[in-house]
Length: 296
Image 1 (tube, helix red, strand yellow):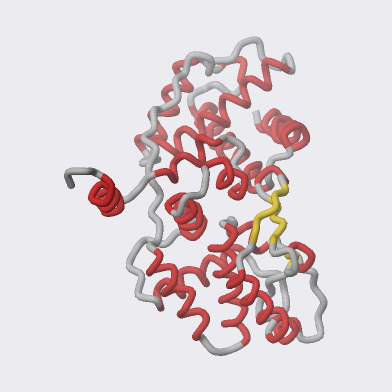
Image 2 (image 1 turned 90 degrees about the horizontal axis):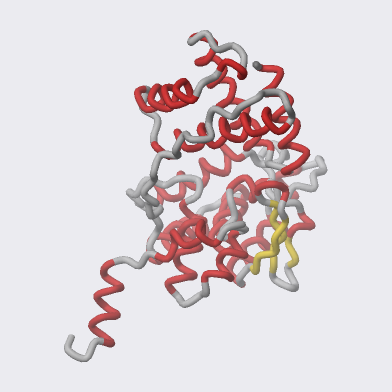
């Protein structure tokens, strides 16, 4: 079955232009699925029955996968079997009546204004050329709501300092333009003028953010920087790679931005993905009620 998986990955890579990480995830999930079927005696997709697909979902749950992860696996499996039928490589799609596990849309944890200010101030106060880079990275993540992968992929030509915007390339190689505020532009200016050249030494790179070895920053290194300054700022929350992105979107909406604009800045294809940020904390609700209800 592995050769069919490779054909499928090649197909979606060309037809959908999916990001490399997405393609790797699909391949990994499908190879795991193929391994399970082989143990059950269904080495060919022609021999796969709906019951086996359902049993695989239960097996994933038994091994501790969350509903979100199971849904991701099932999405890959459904796409794979549809591809096989469409290409006449298989007569039937055994996933047709397999239901997707229902998910509660969880509100992502975000930082308060005080917490994000504490992180940025801590980075601004840190000494050394790497600290100037770190401060610029954190300011830009919060200013533009970038994914960590988008941040490290930025080139020197990706930022227009005069117009005040950054050009990011997101999932599926989709490009978007996001405004960048004064604070982030100032931090970027300091980094480019006083730190980037020293980090590069005698090397050349078109990457905006570079490591102390003069190479393009990795996602892991950028992620570790986020965790470092959150810890130095005394933040106890469970900081994740998307925390600053979630915070960016939430703060915009809380201050009156419209959902469509936030959707465009985040690069979401479906506005329902952006709607998860429309939550409002209880204290703000109480404050609004007290201010505007006639009998509060």
